[in-house]
Length: 436
Image (tube, rainbow, N blue to C red; front, side, top):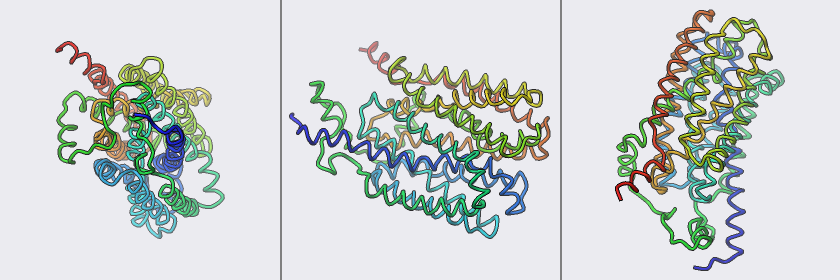
């Protein structure tokens, strides 16, 4: 088969426009996810709630996000990335506008839930786009790049958000975000396409086949019934469940710290102000900005393994939790705390390789469903552990924070065991080779 060189060139360039606008949308996924840690005092002041109320508002994002993970995969596989991402970015914009105009805490909760529902259905369509428009060996690196963009969003939700809030007020910030998000939704509809064939362009598997001279092994346009895709995913044993357990505790612990409790911890235990601890939260985001893409590059180019990178990152991240627990209240050195927070984000960012790991264990035509099934667990972890953390540190005493940090360390020991038990595609290939 001979491919028109101009069409091949257009396909290989246009995909970057699709990835670019969807990455911009993903920026706001992380911004909203972590903003509660910095806005906690403003939320308490605006709505007259305490720490438990702030934790409830923060966790609503994760409950909504978790509930929408399976639907996001199913809708992405059924509707395609373009329609799916556009509709749900619009919902996120509506949620932001409601937050910006909320007269009461109850209305703010509604807005937060809509934001959670909307941004929940951005990541999976992007993963589908990567699976359809890009080569297999580009997946982990691009996933890392996407997480870099997301963590720039988390970075923006620290000191820059403090400055924006001082200038516009909390509600003014959310109103502005709503307008910006509507513009992004329109751009997604204009730019994104589900498949190269929609533009009369060659599919990536056709390009690879022409370049390598090998027959097409798997079509990116194949379909499978939803029930069959779910059955294959959840019934796959060690292919799925160790990664699911690992992700529940791994990401749940990140969100307890970065997304909610780190700011109150530094304020209550060390007496540091919002600007001071927002810089420490910024260090977490900076760490992830470096860690996410580096993990993808190491996985794709150096170790050529998802599992090895996952294990190294998980063990190092677990060690950081031990340091946070053991030094709580005794390490008042700001530079030392900055280093701990940077390392927390850097090694925490290694979670990005799990998406490449799960994608390669299942057929490409259920990439949306299998990735969404895995994505249920980090956000369930975020919702449940954030809510639990709010009850564990009601009085914001040092002892309460020490107990919370100890619990996170113990949960990460469990996560480390799960990571060691996980499988990657190479494990399956070796098993099949031995059978043969």
